[in-house]
Length: 74
Image (cartoon, rainbow, N blue to C red; front, side):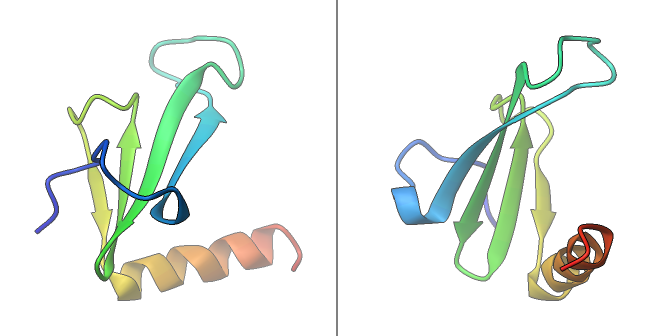
């Protein structure tokens, strides 16, 4: 099981994305979300703190990918 986003992840396996946190009411794009691939898992670390890490296995990541593809019209 992954421990969350790690600083030693390679650039190919890690992305920082500017997003909005509805709870903290910051401006659009202010919050960082780190998305990282560790083995067969995709790790999402909102706020880049490791405090609440979302871990998707391949099946769950595929479902999310397909939803994004449909929603984005691709």
